[in-house]
Length: 159
Image 1 (cartoon, rainbow, N blue to C red):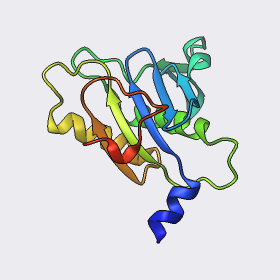
Image 2: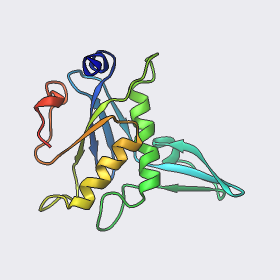
Image 3: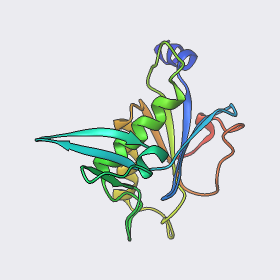
Image 4: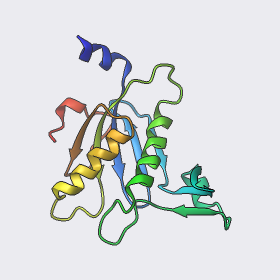
């Protein structure tokens, strides 16, 4: 019963991750949000304040601001978990910004790069934890061909 209620108000999302672009699509619809995975952080004494995320962060120039791409690392896709989680939170919130009620979505995570030979258990755990940190109530990690978000259903994905 509770599962049925969640499905009425909640979206199922497909998150496609790459070093240059993070795409969050609402499954079964053409709706999607594209975010360049950059984050601008200002150190305010002992605290860090997120100033901008996305294209605006990439173009930010100031000696007080640290701009980075947490999805850029020589060996792994996720180089900085904490910053990657904040970028993903921002992208997921953008898919739901016009909704009054924002229940936790079910999320499919699909790493598009640096996945030759599959993902290790640790890499899969990082993807799951990123999605949970961004507010997901259920997560599947998809390995394989790119999915068509407009026709894909969450329950049809094995993961």
